[in-house]
Each structure stands twice: as structure tokens, then as C-alpha cells.
Length: 142
Image 1 (cartoon, rainbow, N blue to C red):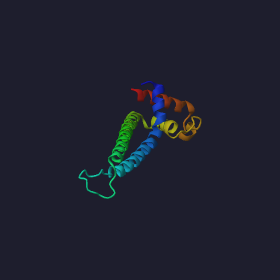
Image 2 (cartoon, rainbow, N blue to C red):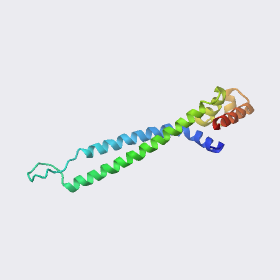
Image 3 (cartoon, helix red, strand yellow):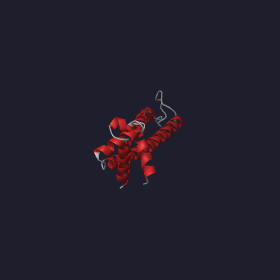
Image 4 (cartoon, helix red, strand yellow):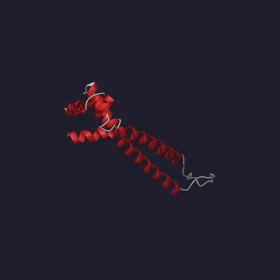
């Protein structure tokens, strides 16, 4: 991994939490729709009347829709796994940092504070903040 790739991962980190929540919500909605269709049954082949049973063709179409839903859930679960892996990778890299270095990284990449305001917020000089950031990025790459 290079420093630009690491910076991109750090910038994306705050959005990962929101995307994970969105995926979980979408999975719940899809499962609810699929469960409704799973309750549909086809007619009994004994030739006797059975009331409001649906036809075989309708049942087959409902089954195809459920299969599409299941495929979409599988795709979302794969994406969810990738998001969790990315979050874990960033969290592991953050553990390598000293508390001061972590403050600079969190302020800039996670809290989205403009670089001009970080020295004032942390009560350090701009040079100290840049040095801590650069050291932090190097440590995170090791």
C-alpha cells in the first residue's frame, strides 16, 4: 500500500459506518419482501378444489423473484464483509499510533476538520501537526 492509497482509505473510513448501516437496512427490507413471497404455495395436484390457491405459473414467478432477492442479499452480504474487513484494517493500523499522532489523523480524516484549524484545535504549531501526521502515515504503512 502506498501513502495515497492509505489516505484514500482513511478518507473513506467515516463513510463505511453509514454504508454498513444502509446495507443492513436494505437486507432487512429484502428479507421481509422475500418472506412474504415464500409463504405462497402452489395448488395441490389431487384435482380437488382448494379455495384461493395460486396457479403453478404464478408460483414459479414468485419463486424466481425470491431467488433474485436471495442473490441480492448474497451480494450485499459480500459487500458488508468487504466493508468490515476495510474497517478492521484501518483500525489495526490506527492501533500502531501514539495518542498525539492519532489525534491529528482523526481530526483531519475522520472529523473532517480543515487543515488550517487543526493546529489551533490541538494547541500545537502547524509544523508539529504536519510532522505528527507524516510520522503517523509512515507508521501505518509498516
